[in-house]
Amino acid sequence: MIRQIKKFISNNIAYTLVVGMLLIIATFTTIKDIQEGNRISRSGVFVIGRIVNVRHRRGTSIEYEYNFGGERFHSSEGILLKDQSIGATYLVKVNPKAPSESRLLKEYYLTDSIRLEQPDSGWQKNPLDRNDSSGPPIKE
Image (cartoon, rainbow, N blue to C red):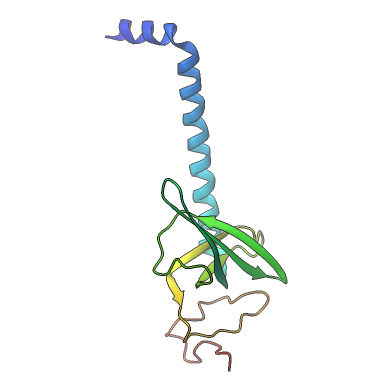
């Protein structure tokens, strides 16, 4: 069995190298995504994101935009949402040190009845958190 594996590898060295490189790239990409998610979870701030495009190619990709620090940022994620229509709003968590790093929070869909006034630097705490006695800052 081992002899057959060695023969296969030696006969297909180019194929083996390509597969090995793809595995290495996939591993580093996964590690980078995990590290980015951890940074956002630890020190991220909350902002309002708006869906600007929905693509259906090999799954659903949601493109969204958000404002932070007076600048507009764009990002996308392959997730399913309650309301995927263009213009729907959700809370987004942003890394304030690298504002292009963000995660759309699919569990925080902002219906038309929820009208928030977002500060330029976002919220340190979730503005929809019901445990905060002051409640969310509602726009009149």
